[in-house]
Image 1 (tube, rainbow, N blue to C red):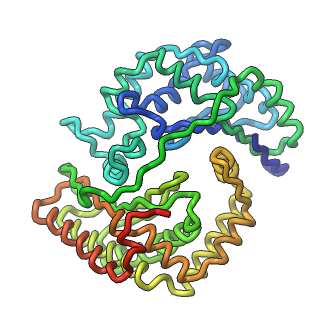
Image 2: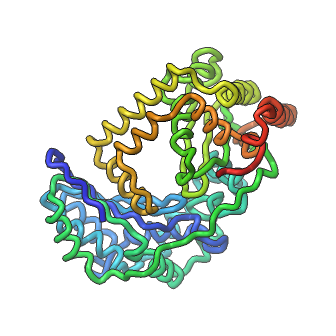
Image 3: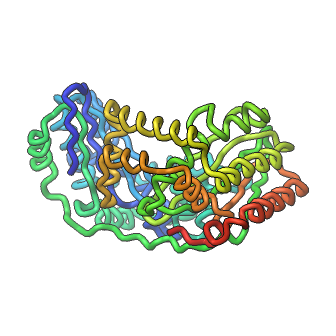
Length: 428
């Protein structure tokens, strides 16, 4: 239980994070966590229809939202402060007494969600799904969070009930309340409304086993005016000593239009309207990617310029002025977090869920202590050729596909001078 008291806020955000996501699934149950998230909107014993539950939430002036991630599921209500107690009661009933009504209707909705990612032949053309499958292979982190049409079709009500009973338990959950109400008042409300939930056990998913990619280039044919390109890497995870350095690597690469990738790809080469780079951390592993869209004929040029920017950062590190700017912007993001309910909830709630308890002050001290050499070494770990995957969803010719393979080999050769730091698939 995490409470964050902000007397000047005029809203309360009630967030329940449950440590269950797509990485806790098996192939035949792929998508069950996402389907469960949907089903918990369908009503409770006290409000057994979706329309009744939604009306009760909205009559409080509140709204209910949920999202499934690779390693946790988020359920949250945004409410007026005076509605906090009844909103908490409704949120508690989602875990205590769901009715799992209208499963066939919800499956139909999820099928439409899955179909959005498929072409007319049933091939997944969602660039994120293609990229994650390439990075994580057969591990559940590489599967679509929605599951497949076949796996969702095979999920029964009994399977959903069992999944709910196994994971939606208090030892596997963190409740976060951000708003103007005092800590003791919130605790009293939670004690009153969250009684009776099963204690259960914390989830322990199978760890990701580090292995180099078997195929560094994947092309999924899709005839469109632009091809979507991902240059992605498996990286060290949130518990790695290099995590903060890797954070700064991606601020040097992409934190505004003056940083390296936008300047090279957009301002100097005119290859794309926009380009982005970022990293998502799980406990023991992360996934970093550089993403952009470009005319099909220019895909090799885009990848060439992108890899040139990445290699330069590994070889030379950031300039002192680049690092200072990245550190200042990181400090500003930590300071501005104090004005944002969702960011506060995410910072403290997600950290608590996984047993990490940073403070903004400690996080800032860690970031400000980093040197250009620390960031260079972080780049070597995060952008290792051994962990690199290039994926393209678009109309790429066979010649350009071979060119992408050549570019991947050239990147490896260019960074060979760094030795084991980048060529060994070790993410510690």
